[in-house]
Image (cartoon, rainbow over all chains, first blue to last red; front, side):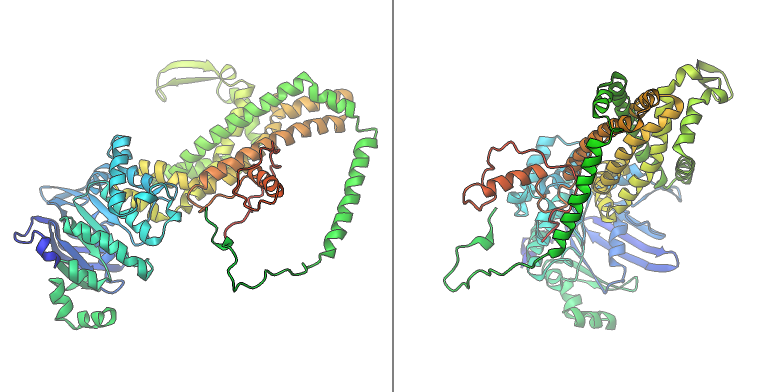
Length: 264
Length: 336
């Protein structure tokens, strides 16, 4: 249904490209060679059992984790490194920070700043990082809060908000930096069941506006309805990928089938 | 605020419980014991001839003592300032990924926390024995500016260096504990928004760490107020030294020390009140609603006892209530 409103005719340019991405913590190899491509304006869902490496992969995309092998590109640029000839140079903290400005991230545990009101949470990064004018940032923040349906909660501290409200503020906070890519790390997993819907509604709205989104989720209904592509990961590798309706409706691999039978 | 539990009693509602409260006979015993001890104390205070209250009053008004208060306050404020700034710096160094920086901070803390302040005070005061003059210039090369150590480090500066640098070592550990108490997700969220390490620390981590840092810092400040009395060993006249000089001159040590103690208590009380409000400020967002201040409680009490108006949220009666004793009991009601 949503497909109708989405510009799906021409596949957009690649926003994220992973080539043989490996990541290990000491001896434990969490990602064992991930290859995938996320196109502009696509809603890309990552599903899989816990420990499959999907959250780790997401965190690699904005360099919260360093990859050990392979290449990872965001909007055509290498993540975390600069390549000169066949040599890689680590980026400075400042350069990494600059790239992160274009990538919004929403966390499972919200991670709102508890000492700031909802409004301050949203204006903080534009004012401190982009040096935006305070009044202008405030106006934009109010518009964003309005959009996630929380304009009346602007003056509340996170502890005075429900989980669903906190997560919606967190989405507004990420959007305030006007990112070209949004990463969602199990955004509804910490929520009471009746609060999941309000967060998914906001995400659905974003998708309809053409935001490129990578979503780690257990919400198969959301993936099927809103997703443009879906990857099933297990044990640090991509087991199966394709259009969500195909993968979820007609899984080809035994592991995918076993997993889906438990969550659907 | 709406109070949902104050709805008008509905028809089927059972009668409110009126039970006989539990008796506490033990309380009456403790009251009696405390009353007797209190009476004994008062008796000593007002009948013992060694306690010459007129003399206590004279010491309280003595100009050197009054001047000593200022010296004590100056030392406390400046040394704590050095301590807090140095402590934050050292804590950040210790948590740095650079092994040289964290090693240097570790070494500093090891030295300055591992030797008595008294020793450090004497060392700073005698720095002239180590270096006759202190100069700025290229290490092992020419110098552009120099000054005699004894001129550059007068007694007050020596006292300040001794107290402040020592305090920085303690504050470093307090600040480090505070920084580490902040959830890692906070700096992650800050970094994901594109903040630099420094911005994340200044805007996100430190303000939250303050909640953990402030109470022990209050302790340190009060402790510092009293530790300043140690500068007597380098002959700097502050509150204690001034009182002590009088006591040795007049052979009335008890009265002199009581006078000095009155000032110390007065100063610590003021500091405690300051700490209370500072803690309240940094508790923003951590509690859903802040507990009322002692002043607000006293007002609420009067407002509550005034006519038959149970609603505590009514405008407080204009009674100029005295500020509650500092006590500093942050217990209040934590949460329901």
